[in-house]
Length: 133
Image 1 (cartoon, rainbow, N blue to C red):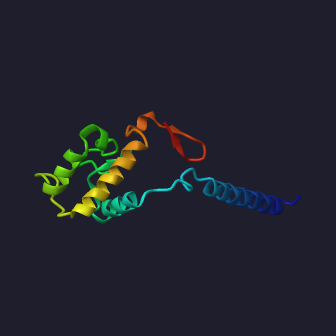
Image 2 (cartoon, rainbow, N blue to C red; image 1 turned 30 degrees about the vertical axis):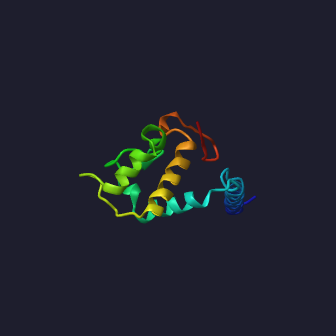
Image 3 (cartoon, rainbow, N blue to C red; image 1 turned 180 degrees about the horizontal axis):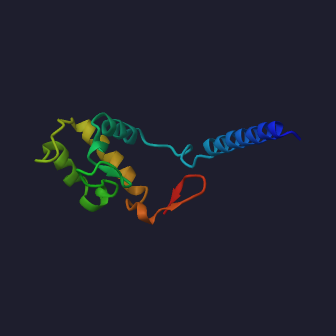
């Protein structure tokens, strides 16, 4: 086989392998079939609209100005979180969220809290890019 044909065969094999593996990963995502409550989805939207990730982390990912909020629902409780959201602090501004937005954000934080622990050093990274605790 000529060297030029061999290069083309190797390139084609690599491209086909990459496409197959990518398709396999996207079709076997572990979270695609898990239903999420409507309040949780609204809370995620409030989180994103107010850019909470700029200051706070979830699972160790995000900003460093505020604390990691992955397990804040269990550690502090909903009343404590609600007070922060309603009044703000010197570091965290008051976003003037209405009662529905606060309840949705609490549902989102509760859902995140129930899904695992925040310390990424305890995660096991699988070969397909997912993580386990």
